[in-house]
Each structure stands twice: as C-alpha cells, then as structure tokens.
Image (tube, rainbow, N blue to C red):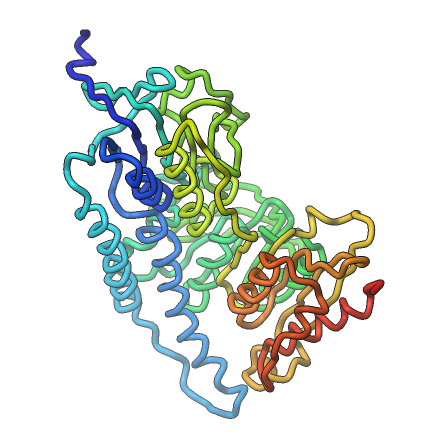
Length: 468
C-alpha cells in the first residue's frame, strides 16, 4: 500500500455530492443498502438554497415591493418614491437564505456519521475513488457534483470588482452601480431586481437573444418590454474593460444611439452560464466516454453512464440545470445505483422552466426550437394587453404561443411571457404530461375574471386551426 492509500473501504454505493441531486440519490440508494457513503468536499447546503433559487427570489420579492409603490400611481394611488434601505434588504435576504440552508443542513445532520465523508473524491478507475488519503471501492457510484459559474478570461483583470451570483447574497448593502453580463435567466432576474431596488445597471448580452426563449416572436416581445424599463443590449458591442481604482470602466457602443460611451461601475456581475463540476474528478482514469465538456455520456432515462456502474445526476450533467430536475435525476440515479445491475427508466416529467422577471417568462413541453419546421404544427396566441384581469391589475404585458398538432389536437408545448406565468405554466405542464388535446383542455373550468381566461383565448385560437 502506498502513502496515498493508507486505508481502503468497500461500499455498495458511493454518492459524490450532497446537493439537490446528491441527497435524493443517497436516500433512494439507501432503500437497498446501508453500506453507502455520501461524499462532499465542499460546503453543505444546496446551490438552490445557498446561492440560487431561494436567495434570488428573496431579492426579487424586495424589488417587486419597491416597484409596486412606484406603479401605484396607475391606479390613482399616489405615494412618494420608495426609500430603499440596502442594509435592511440584504439583511432579510441573508436571514431567510440562512433559514432555507438550515433545513438542508438539518437533513444532512440527520444522516449517521458513518455514511458521511467530508473530503474531495477522485476516480482511480470505474469503481475506485481516492478520498483524502484513503480509497473507496464501490460497486456503484453516483456523480452529483453540481456546477459553478463560468467566468471568461476577459474579466481576469478586474479582481474583487468581479462578482458572480454567489457573491451577491453576501452583500451587507446594495451598491450604487452594477454592470451585468449575460442576458439569460440569472442576469435578467438579478439585473431587473437590482434596477428596481435603485441600483444603476446596464445589462450586456452576447447572443442577441433572451435565453432560454427560442420562439422569435416571444423573444422579441420580451426584449422590447425589458428595454422599456432598463438598459438592455442583447448583442453588446464592447470596446474595453479595465479596473480603475475601486471601479470598473467599461467602454461600449450604445445600441440606442450608436454613440461610443464609457461608464464606471462598482461591480461587474458575470452571469454567462454555469459549467458542470467534473474537472478534477479524474474521469480520465475511467473507461467512461466523455463529451466535449468532459461530462460522461449518459442515458437520461436511467442516468447510467454507458454500460458502467457509474451514474450522473443534476447540474453535473448540465442538460436541465433546474432544481426539480436535479432532484428527479438524483432519485433515478440513486435508485438504479442501489438496484444495480437491474436498472430501470425513471419518471421524467414534462419540461418546465420559469424565469422570475417581471413579466415572468415560461417554457413548457417542447420548445419552438424543437418543433419549428415540423409538418402540421399550429400556433395559437394571445397578447395580454387587452386581457381583462391583466388590465384590472395593471399587469397587462405579455404574449403567449401555444403549439399543437393540427391533426390530433395534441398539446405540444408553449413559450410565453406574461403575468403570473409561473401559475399558467404549471397548468400547461400538467396538461402536457397528461398528453391532453386542445379540445380536452378547453373542457376544463375557467373562472371569471382571471388571468387564466387569457390561456383559454390562446387555446381557442389553436382549436380554430385544428383539422378535427
């Protein structure tokens, strides 16, 4: 035995990562065996609870409260401009964030110490892990190591003025200005929230679109709405980026007037995507086939990597980086790791994605990118400007597209921006998972007056185009 392998332990299942995918994987596998370990080399507490879903929604909730005061004049209710106390805003964000994290930590604390290992793991081969100065021989292994923010080399020179979304939720107060790079989910949510909380922002994108939308009409509508509220350039022409004392100077061409400008910001928030945490795992020591990102090629129905005894789940595979998908994938991977070699496909729910900007954005079922160009696809739509309930509450901005098969009437999917999209999206996702047709959906009850009547209008538009 060499110096790096002082002891060896044999287990049935080893789960690497104690986050949104790892914890469900551990619980699922434990139904089959007690000879199981959960390995975590980083901080306990899921990405969702610590730096993702929950703290971002806390910041957004504060922004919505501030915005509601400013929007009240539309009802004839006039109030002075809200006074935003940055210390109080961020104090609540951190307190509530810590509360959510504590629930996750409690789950981990309830796990017997014999199952927990607080060290980094590296593959030596398909079944052997180097963990600290010991080795673990596992019949099956689940990779659930999550993801990390991508930071491009262009930001290397700005030092501590560079932040990722993880950093925001440690702020003790709000800064005066932030330049946001990335017009996807994270950039849009946090950028708009900071703007509504009085932070001067400019949001720069590179792709020319608002992700994850793929429907051109919805994307263009969304871009127009957000540009009317704050500076947004989805295809920014950047000329320079440099650190100036405790600021970052950015030179760019203003897309609105074509004039070259230079502005200084307290921070640069990089929200240009996340990368799976697979580097440093030693996957090159295994027989697993890897894709161009270094991620093992796997079956999304079983989470199995090839024909091996290794499974991968959650953000580590980077196909559906959403909390509910990570939990589902973790359960599937853990269940199959525990029952190996008798594996089976797990439950994969209908695709559902929501962006908590205002208006909210949602995608359900098949995206337009997946079905565009297919024969016999019809599209129904509604603009929310004239929708009854939306106008009543002054939330009448939005456009919804419903996709269906012309011949069968089967509901295929939807992309939309609009009021209370999070709730409309759930109705649609349930219908999609039940494989409902448009006529069946129209038979469901719709109360009056509610925003859901707008969904009915879109369904009626689709129905009129069906060959039934």
